[in-house]
Amino acid sequence: MNHRGLLFFLVGFGGVLALGWFGFPACLYRPVEQPVQFSHKVHLGDAAGQTCEDCHAIREDGSFAGLPPVEKCTNCHSVQIGSTAAESLLVANYISPKREIPWLVYAAQPTHVYFPHVRHVKIAKIPCERCHEMRGSSEDLPLVRVNRISGYSRGLRGSYMDDCSGCHRMHGVKESCLDCHQ
Image (tube, rainbow, N blue to C red; front, side, top):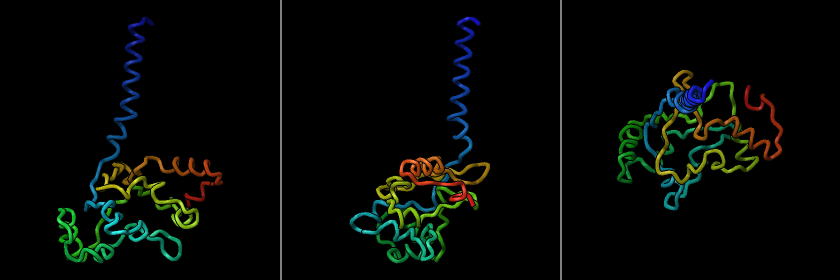
């Protein structure tokens, strides 16, 4: 093979790799906006003084309650108290008609995959920001990346299983497949 042929091969091979590495995920996941924009910074800041657990609670039985019901918002927003378009939308579309907000889940997984929040948040005392990045300081919600084939969403950090296993290894925590895959 001459140098020119090798160069064409390497450029072509690199192009195919780049297309597969960057192009395929871009085509596989569609970005979807949350139904209402939300500022964690405003709600967790000094003015409101809330914590993550005020809205994203863990039930008495140790299961994660998940996304907050609209009644959590109603406690403060029975009428509009700010001047943002997002709050106007919240009050008009969800609080006044008493409709639940159809929040999208950032890490929607198959029903056989289980993540025990109580073990991590309450027992191990791991702060929410360890896995959910600096969500508490964000002004708005990022797009949800939904897989066009499976319908599951991709976590904000990418591959949660790799992140979880890496953290377990780093802290000497033994794990088995059945800890999360039931």
